[in-house]
Length: 84
Image (cartoon, rainbow, N blue to C red; front, side, top):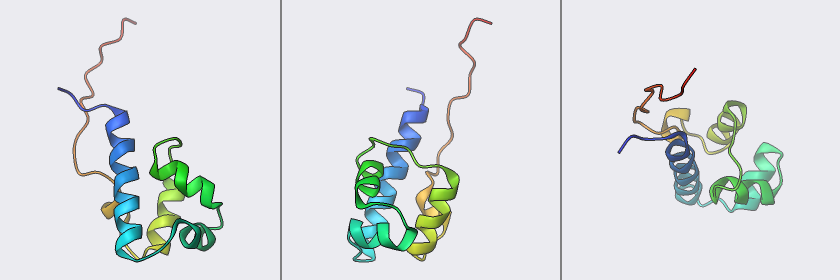
């Protein structure tokens, strides 16, 4: 089964949650560090919202990790199945 962009977002959400917990940060503490709301962090971690590259950099910096620890390490199926 090909990987879809939703799989990427799900992996990012899970990685952020895992890394935050490993650093013993609450959602509120992480939110404070990157100047976003706790609700926003919760929405990212639960997959309600997707985060952009700037937000990923801010989260990685706050968690003292590489963005590569947040981004998934797999390839998407980029086959074009659209009728143009």
